[in-house]
Image 1 (cartoon, protein in one colour):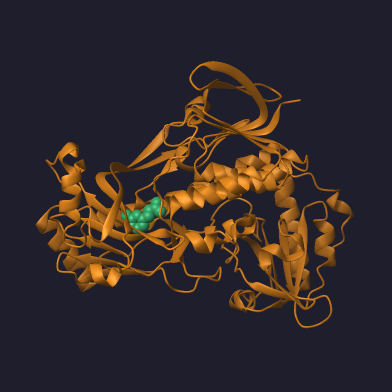
Image 2: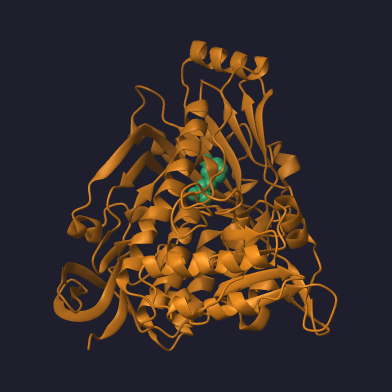
Length: 528
Ligand SMILES: O=C(O)/C=C/c1cccc(O)c1
């Protein structure tokens, strides 16, 4: 019997969140991290509504308001401060709050770490560098070097490499990396506003990209921690400029000087980052998997780097849960890359589109870009992705059902006189069967060996009320009387009436069986 169900390599935010997801399921998890102390400085600054909802669902609901600020409209300006593009991050999202929140990553990580340490089945091996990972028939053996000296071994059923862009687990898997071709060096500066200083007084956009070819510049929030407000500036390294000259503190203050000086802000850190776009071609080999930066990196301009990694963990957590419970064999884990890779690819396309828009240090090229945006001839940005492959409903066996693969709405429910978030309804977790005026009994029966909950919307006995109306609106929009939502909140598919709903449930059972989930003998189920 291996020591653990899962060993996670690395302890950044993706690994912290995954350890919490798995710890809440009661899995025996070891997390191995070469550094004793967490990296204290901010990196990511964005949490979109989907991941805000995920973090709420894994117990961070009280911490989130203390570390996040609702995002404003994200504006893209030319050198004359004329708006080229606006992405409204302040608008109400399908999950309830705004589209994007800005987060102070070190404080978020503190909250995640505190929550992980409450999980009695999770052990942290800090100061322990993983030096080899070897998989055999029945498990994986990981060799650790503690504080650079002592070696010891741990074993597990699965190992997940959340070990960053230089991932050891990725190279052990033998995965290549596709380079999508974007590369630029940027100086990233994080500051804390001095007490009483306001954004208005600094004369900066709430969240903006200043596409000035003389110095492409990013000016965005960087979250809060209690009553302290953080901001970020990013400055592109220009052709011919050395990293050394850009990284000096004198240069940092010179670059900030149009907006802020030491009287207004305290410098937290400054560092040059090489923004790239890389995608691993193999995310799993048997018992080894990779997630987060180990699997993909993208330019930061859509604020999706950390979000994409957290989505990896969320996708893996429910599938690993079924496998570790013996309800599925490990073929189910094949759907991890099938589902996540196209999603990340599309987000990378969107991030590269935005990166190409701002990383223009040439005045003529910038004037050309501006003209295209003002005349409306610039190509539109790629859409924000949803799931397009994997465990999704294909009613005729081929094309996806319209609506399948979308993120489902999140709402507050009222049930038996109590109000609660949807993710907490009936204990939380598992598949959700939403119905309006349909009896879900046959469908529940077909799926009875899965963790699942029925949410009967309506006014009568045993029903729940969607207080926000977003689920009702979503069902109306698709012409559905019911839908099935996966444990990661993505829509498997929907149905217009009771018979179609039963067919939907059977199709899910078939798809899951084909993906390695052990279901009872489906031939005994009668469907009208
Ligand atoms: O959260 C991140 O990884 C990056 C956020 C961000 C948001 C807006 C503009 C940027 O250059 C970075």
